[in-house]
Structures are given as C-alpha cells and as structure tokens.
Image (cartoon, rainbow, N blue to C red; front, side):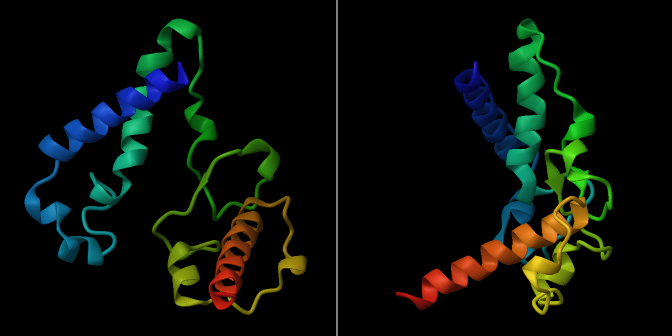
Length: 141
C-alpha cells in the first residue's frame, strides 16, 4: 500500500507539474520570490500537494483515516506536541517563523532552554539543532 501511494503521488506530481503551473511559475526567478503564488497553488510545495491528493485515494479500501487535523499543524502554536505529530512552518512572522529562522533571529537561543513539549519551541529546537549539526559537519570537512 505504501508503495502504491508513493507511485500515485509521483503521478500526481507529474500531472501537476505538466498541467497546473506555467513556465514562469516553474522558473528559478519566480522561486527566488519564495512565496510567489502563496497561499494559492505554489510550485515549491508540489510534493505536499501530491501526498494530500494521493493518500486518500490509495487508502480508501483499507479504512485508513487521513486525519487532516493532524497534518500541517502550525508551528506558531503553544499546544502540546503530543497532540500534533506533523507540523508545518507557515509563511508568517509568529514564533516559530521560518522567515525569522532564515534571518537568524533564533541563532542566539540555547537548545536546553526550549520546552520540547510545546509545538513552537519543539519546531525551533529541531530547526536549530539540524542547522548546527550541519554546520559542524561542514566544518569538519
């Protein structure tokens, strides 16, 4: 079933790529604007769209419940991570904000000070830890 969902997702990506976005929307220049097209169709999140479209279709006969309330929960929430297994940093300026993160506004934060039980602070921890580990790995080269 997982492979079938993956195959269907790839077909959906191909269809969307060919039929839903024009050459301008697919261009590097357009992508540099970062949020062009947002919150409508946005080429940069094509894989997310394909999964959202494919999963319900390929799991209908299994009784699988896609629980949209558990997907793409906003990282600016202070709710418990125990209730939200899949978070999404949206295009906003509320903590945790991917815009602020990209600018380095959270670089001063200490990982041990973050409350990993809160969605917003867990997202911050994950982003900072991954970035710091990546930088260490690059420095060791």
